[in-house]
Structure formats: structure tokens, C-alpha cells
Amino acid sequence: MAVSLYLFHPLLSLIVLLAPLPTLYTTYVGNKLEFRFTRDNTKILREADYYQGVLLGPSAKEVKVLNLFDFFFAKWKALADDYLIRETKNQRNVFLLGAAGGFVANLANVAANVFAIVLLTRGELSIGALGAVLSLNGTLMGNTSQLFGSIAKFLAKKHEAVQFFELIDLKEQETGDEDVGPALDIECLEARNVSYRYPLTDQYRIRNVNFTIRRGEKVAFVGENGAGKSTFVKLLTGMLEPSDGEIRINGAPVRRQDAAGRYDALAIVFQEPSRFNMFTVADNVFLGDTARPRDEAAIDTALAFAGFGGADRDALLGRDIGGTDLSGGQWQKIAIARAYYRGRNFVVLDEPTSNLDPLAEAEIFRRYMAMSGDRTVIIVTHRISAAALADRIVVFKDGEIVEDGTHDELLAAGGEYARLYAAQAEWYDR
Image 1 (cartoon, rainbow, N blue to C red):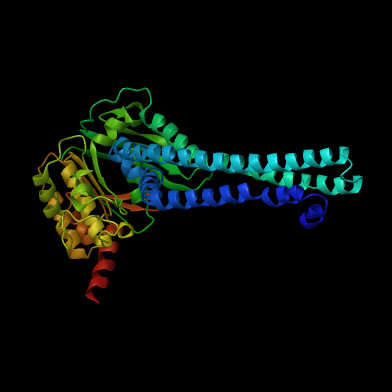
Image 2 (spheres, rainbow, N blue to C red):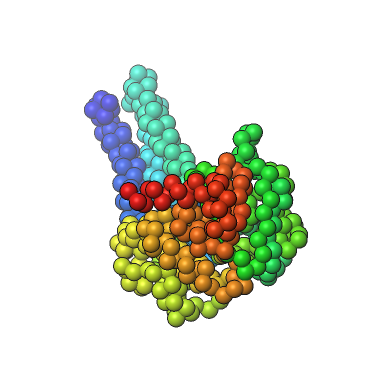
């Protein structure tokens, strides 16, 4: 087409050939801006994504229990704010480049059409040739589409903002308008006719359980895998709401008490504890209680209590960021140290040593049992050797409590506990 137009008028051909150049140039520069932005902001985006995962992923329950939501939210928001400001500036520049290129290209096409009409009025161009020139409208439409494509790309980048506001909403839900009271002083924790079933099903995980634990008691929950031990712990600590019955603290229903105060009274170690990467070993312990000034000596004491070793206390954790990669057992010991550093009078150990050998597990449990008499401890385990260290043993089977007593009493009774004891003794004798 350009050659044909050249036969009618060289200027027409020149306009047609030069019209796409502004768009090509601005697209090239825009792609370079996008590449540089991605290269320069990968680290900040990765860190923001990590904190978002901590707040919304599997670590959320431990974050809630440790009252760490505000701590991690502040870190995420600072990164997200910085990233969104940078991205908005970059996208604005890319958009303006695309708009400028599209505008110049469209202006060139309009100029070509106007010039062709002028040539027609002078008799220098035939009607047929004019039709050929006007076919440049296709190019005009193409450039217009590119212009609106730039706008669409700019708007599409708002998906990070959507996630931003979702977390803002979650932050408001977490804090609410209620006053946050002090940590509860738990003298007595009680379950009355508690049952729990999965939502939208009739399948009960816990059925009609009654249980009371008072300050200073050291209690072990035992039973086979799937017996309901961990589910019942979640009900006791408020992580789950009973389908029937109620949990009471100091005689008052749990649901009527401040959630933050309830969590602040507890030190819980979960079977799969949170792994707070991008922090040091010592930082991970400090996260057990960020409300008080950091105490390095207490952190070292907590690590020694848990028997942690194999990595420096100041080692940055996380293989993805070039840090130290810990084993599952080391992470569990960090979680135990975190609970110890937290220093609460009500401790729950929900199978926290599944990655440790029985001797190491028994040693950690023995240390907890040797704590001051007024500290309440619940240990969840399927290992009878560890349960035998407790003052009192509660046996779960099929979501119910079937036995409750001391190690010697339950062995003498010859029931479920005695069966589990005999089975495990036979296994260790092999």
C-alpha cells in the first residue's frame, strides 16, 4: 500500500510508513520499564507475600494464639504500601507512554486522511485512490485498540490492591471495637457435655465430653491417632466452637470472654508449629511474647530448655532467602522454646515432639512436668512413655473420654490405656 500511495504522492507514503513508529518505540520503552520494575522489586514482593501467607495461611492459628496479628500485619502493610506506591508510579509511566504513542500514531493517520481529501479536492487523487487511503482507518482502529489495551493493563494491575483491602478488612475484624482486657488468670478450665461435628455434616469428632482441669494439674491426653485428642484441645483453647455444650473458664462460658485475653493466657505448641522464616532463631523465640521488652538471656534460657542445637541463635532462617534450613525436629524445639519464653501459667503441648525420638520427647515433657506447682500443663501424645510422666492421664477413644486416672490406676484397671501400654511395650521390645 505504501508503494501505491507513493505513486500518488510521496508524502502520503511517508506518513503511512512513519505512523507506527511512535507506538513501537513507546511499547519498547514500556517493556523495559516493566522488566526493571520486576527486577528491582522482586525481594519486596516476596517478603510481602510471605507475611501475607503467615496471616492467612496455616500459621494463622498460631499467630492468633500468640497475639502476633498486629506484629505481622504492620510488617506486611509497610511492604505492601511501599510496593503499591512503586507499582502505581511505574504503571502510570507505562500507561502515559502507551497513550502518547497511540495518540501520535492516530494523529498521523488522521493527518494522512485529511491530506488525501485535500489531494482529492485539488484533483490530484482519484476516488479509488482515496478509498485506498481511507483503508488506513484499520490501522487507526488498531492503534486505538492498543491505547485501550494499555488502559486495561493498568486497571488489571489493581489485583494487588484487592488483596491489600482484603487484609485491611481482616485487620478490622481482628481488632474490632471491643476493649482488649488483660490476660485471663485461669484457675479452672471446664468442658460441659461438649460435642463437635464437622460443619454441614452429622459426623461427630467429639461426643458428649465432660472434663475439668484446675490450676497446677499436669494432665496427659492419650489415645490412638484420630481419637479426638487434638480436636478437644482446640475446643478447650477456643480455636474451635463446640457444636453442643460449652467450655467454661473460671465458671464463665468461654464465648463471653475477650478472645485476645484468653489467648494471652495460654502458651501452646502445635504438632506442626509455625516456621517464621526471614527471622533468626532468637527472633523466632522472641515472637512468643512481643509485648514485653526483648530479653536475650531469657531467649538463651528458653533455647537451652528446649535442647535446641545445630544452628546459631543469630542465624537467619529460610533457604529461599539464602538462610539456614532447619529440620522438622529443630523447628519443633524452637516452638517449645517460644512457649517457654512466653512464660504463661497454662501450657498446652499438642504432640509437639512428633519429629523427635522418644527419649528426647520424654526429656522435654519431664522438664515441663518439673515446673512450678501452680503451672497448668496439658500434654497431647500417643506415646505412653511420655504420658506416664503426668499426674493424671485422660484416655480418648472414638471422640469420647473412656478413662481418667493415674498411670498406675489405669494399668490396674486393664482397659484401653493398659491395651495401648502393652501394644507399645511390645513394639519397643522388637
